[in-house]
Image (cartoon, rainbow, N blue to C red; front, side):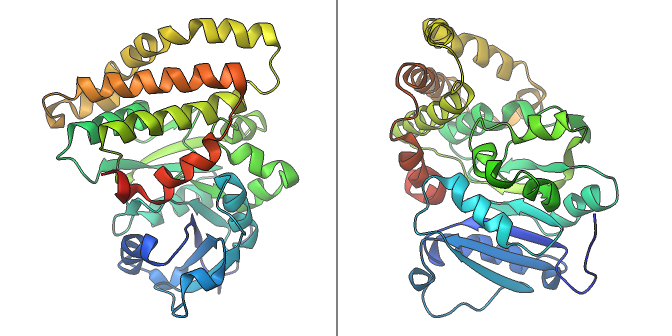
Length: 312
């Protein structure tokens, strides 16, 4: 992996509609130890929507006009193509790197040879039982534990070798969508994936009960639609019939996971109720995907991803 010593070490790609939407993220990037080595890539519907003040909080600012934010994977892919650093982080408007969090991600890729590296996530709104339920259901199996190689990573908040992503060409947007399998493709090509607990991001989680269910429904529908796109009707029907078992199987896996164990003392009383409701929403989303595909879920999911504060 080549690197321009005069250019940024990492490009932080995030999809947004306005600068106000990413105000907290901008502040988190501004207080990084070496902000001049960071390039911020904003994938947005139009530069005009950002306003006239485009002063960068870091070393470099790149604005990519996407015309729309849905589906999000198209915006991320456009941001990756516009990035100039050898390492790209696919960030979120609601996940904030702690001071010094980006350097371990860059080092693991540039020096240790990993293709993709994910940080440890901490709960940014821990006072809510529903927030903990959302965090555990989305990321529980990846939380806690030591520095370790893994077989799969969440696409969001993960750092990647940019050249490996660009090598996918026109396939890149499809691989970056929920369930798209970019991690599986990287592993199939002989690359390694890592969770780096010394890199910490504070993650805001959906906390309204209705939003918890709806968010999991649309995310699961997108994920299952991507995963089952090439399946036969018979196989989709089989998985649809088994979807009522998802809350039991997945719920048991998460409760027994290192992430749940590591945070057991932090979990508020009553966390199992929103956890169970969210699992039900997830199962319903998968059922809908096997029966009718993704539907409008890619568009509906944008609000939960971009405007997380509306659902706290």
